[in-house]
Image (cartoon, rainbow, N blue to C red; front, side, top):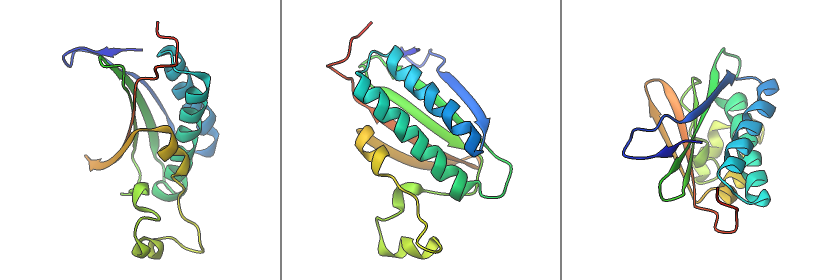
Length: 150
């Protein structure tokens, strides 16, 4: 795991095709990084499930029927916070808005809409932005004081 010190660190990253078969690898990567940071088992599991939920939403809604990739980057800040950045090359899609506004339901067919409950439980802060034709979802996870720090 890389610690951010004055923007010199190179974070750990995994990139996989935006397919259901990639979800276990992506979630395992996040679990591994959280474990390396010394987070408690409960936190590690929650972050893995959050990565699964995010990847599933991306595949179903942003990358539906098109070739795309999902990348996950993990960086631990010097204050102990873990930043998990999930980037995809799919269509513009802000899953954080689903369920927030009644109008958002108009964008999803047949009652099918993305779930963000697990992500919201796992991360202190969630942020979405669109840049360079990529969706970028950032989880900020506070230092886990109950974990074993290395």
